[in-house]
Image (tube, rainbow, N blue to C red):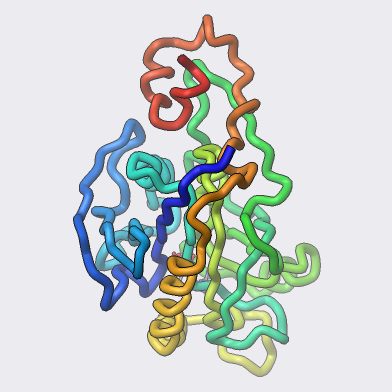
Length: 272
Ligand SMILES: CSC[C@H]1O[C@H](OP(=O)(O)O)[C@H](O)[C@@H]1O
Ligand SMILES: Nc1ncnc2[nH]cnc12
């Protein structure tokens, strides 16, 4: 069964608002998982409503591990979002990718340290969604490291050789996992900003270098958001939109009422 597509955009480093679009409203939401990173800005791009949330908060206040990913995804879900375009600044792990190139990874490799709450399930309700293809599009592996410090050269070489990573960042997880549990299509748009620290002839990554590339690319990033907003179809029947249909294993009779209430926005249709 198809659903009307509602687009959410999560802005990463250097992208704290979308310039030059018509703002319709600002939503300050609360969730059972705490407050999201910031207010969500509802904007119009052409005929489409877009909900924009800066992942690190305006002014970039949150470290990768401090980003309240569950609250962010839940708040977007409250607004009806079912398609997420997640924008990220990334280190480049392959020679052929140049700074400023945009990459759309189709795989994610988890090198976070397990301290980031990464599921909506638990506390009385067990569920398991399928993640063989974790995003909605194709194009290489995003290695998600814990950070906030950048990698050592040994780690950088390992990610290139053992994982064959295309890009490296710190934020696609648990965001992408939670979007799947929340039955959303999730696409990653990575801007390659630096060669991390593996390249013999290129500078090692610095924050200044990352921000300079993002600054130079900001018009392109905005154009891509506009194109996605314009071209995305009005309806979708993607299986991501039913990812939790068969995920919940707990007998409904033993799910505590508090757990049902906590997950009502996400799974009410399966629990009632
Ligand atoms: C500012 S460099 C490191 C920082 O940038 C990336 O953030 P995001 O993915 O939100 O664009 C990276 O993951 C780190 O959080
Ligand atoms: N080299 C790098 N490692 C991790 N995250 C990044 N974001 C931008 N460049 C990065």
